[in-house]
Amino acid sequence: MTFWSRKLWILGGLCVALGGCATAKQTVPVQRYSLGLLARADYRDYAGAKANICEAEPRWLTDELSAVNGLMARFLSSTDQALDPEGVEHDKHLEMLKQASETLGSVLDVHEANLTSMKACAFATKGAFPELSRRGKDLLDRARSRLADAPKAIEASELKEKQRLWVEEAPMREQTARQTWCAKRPEVGNTDLYFARQYTNGRTEWLFCDGHVVEVAANGNEPVLVSPPGLSWRERRRVKPPRYIEAARNYPLEEIERMPGTELRTSWLNPPTASESSGASQ
Image 1 (cartoon, rainbow, N blue to C red):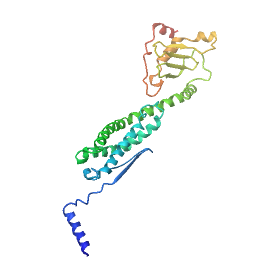
Image 2: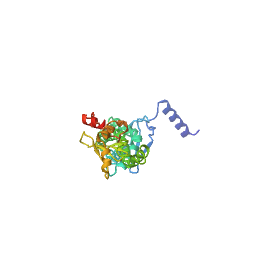
Image 3: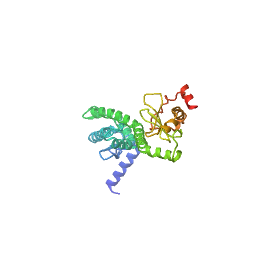
Image 4: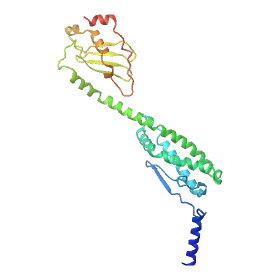
């Protein structure tokens, strides 16, 4: 063994015995985080590596903290329409928020730990560090609040899609119900009811196989009967309005179609008047 080899071996043994040398600081690996195509940052998890952040190179630390602050700022600007289903970039912002809700939280935790630990460093009050710390805290609060809104944003988006399908598929459901419950040539005056729907403004209608419709206006409580055009005078004589209205009132509430996310309004469910009951029994 040469002299220098023996010396290095002795120094290495002393470092082990004394718990490490000052020049043998633990290396903290760089971690890279990407959110979409625009939001990226390199950072180090000093606490996770059990390293003292105060021993970090200040210039590198400045770059790392700035990068994560920038990442949070871009995340916020790229998701501000996620809660607005009518926003021009809603779908794009919601997708970004979905991705962030699964991955960004751990980065925020590391960044907060770094900012907190840095307060004990001698350089914490120098250069750009005070502003980095102040801005980082503000962005952390806003980013966490935005992540907390993710479930609500996703739920609102899913509801919007259900409502779109509800409107789009309404004619098909109505036609299927008619084919299922109505005779090929329904007799006028027969109160067979095959479909009921409540619109988002509260207007409700019940459809009968002979073409009649019982309606309740959005702001009204009294049901009215609407006859199809072209009835002969003999057909009109067979029509007993109270019977249609009674059939509408007796239609199961759970079978009245309404847009997903809306509540069924039932103010029209009043007991039939004496005249209606009398007419229904004729």
